Length: 328
Image 1: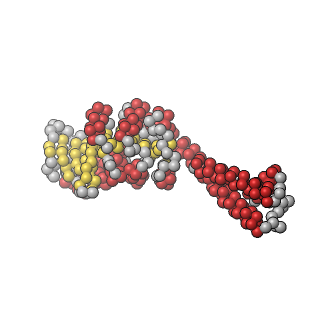
Image 2 (image 1 turned 60 degrees about the vertical axis):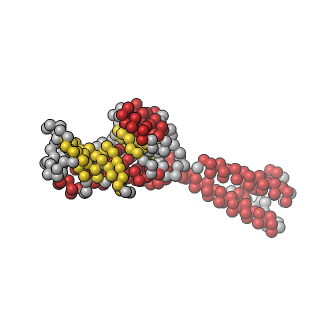
Image 3 (image 1 turned 30 degrees about the vertical axis):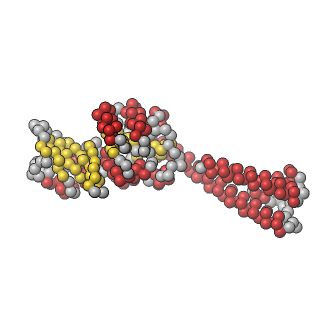
């Protein structure tokens, strides 16, 4: 917006200078009178004391061009000012909203993956605050239409993280296209809120493995926007431990600990099929802690038991809601 505004200002001054020279040369007006006539023409004030009525067709056409071009530039300028004031009011509103947010998700980076993650989170009714470095980023307007607050700045700086009330956030997703930048985001967030859940977009599998073991940070691998549901689920549900593809179908691996009051307690593994297709990978009962790989379908679930399954994100979402580990 700033570049566009400066361009309009430069064009207006250039057009004004050329017009002053033209009217001074053709009409024989003094420099001050020429400037006065140009300003009254460009602003469509037109007091009538200087007229082109008796001048040649060429100078009349030049005057018409000056008026029409000036009107277009003024319209563009007014539109930009209105847009700026509207955004200022919205930012003021969202600024107050950000300061009151709790248990929300912070999304860093509005690229192809980031915007898909945001759409998924909003579809699930999650409260999200976005941090994006570029004010004129490709997906900024689309994010605003989704009704989320956007903070522009360097996400690795504590002041920017404090603007999104990071100390009250439950998760942060680092979805930029730079592994080291994502790691820096994670460490900065952990420094301000040690218990925050971190989901990273990582391209280097070896680096991701070291981060997982060395910092205890949740990582998700991605090279495309297809992994957006995995990012979203990992931020919403702490039970997500991994993801993989079967063809083009994204599958999540979740580790569900049956909670007190869970709708899953007292049901068999086979009974979970009502939430959708899934595969039970591992079962660990609370009573003896002995792991069972590929447990029997008639295995009964009880509070404290841990079940690891693989399923598509939508099924994982429904199971998480039934268990009470994520809210709908």
